[in-house]
Image (cartoon, rainbow, N blue to C red; front, side, top):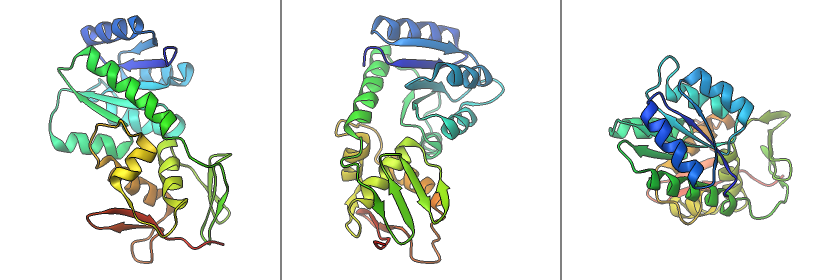
Length: 231
């Protein structure tokens, strides 16, 4: 974990200098960018394990940067913002953020959250690398690919792990707490609605039609279950 790569994208020079110095001192390999476009360029070159990303960036804002990152990067993302409104947190999570820190924050807290995310990534890896074949979907954990009929479905790392966690127990209801433990790790300390945000994105990518029987059913007040039939 000490050699993990962290990209800090923030236009506040004081925060960038403080965070990068603290992370470097803690053994991380750190790169910085001070606007959204520079951050995206740096991300494609640096291939970070974790991105610390401010929402309020000049030009391309943090949420748009996050959307673009999610199209070709599996890096974990910790959002930074001076805003404390609930809607900002939910939007960030729905776009694909893994954690959320509101300014002002302590560098020690940020390091703890980054280390927790990296531990969750290992703890939340899929349990059994076996091919799952259903009437609608084929889920290949060895290749980390999902196919719906003849079309490949492009998923983020987190979305794939969430789908696999549900599909390996078809017909069984998994609570949000169980899904968090399996996908985010037992030491996750964020909002459990992160599951709802990722399920929403997963359904959209799978073309899960609410007008018909869904692949992922919501069990109100409990959690979710995968209901596709074995092939």
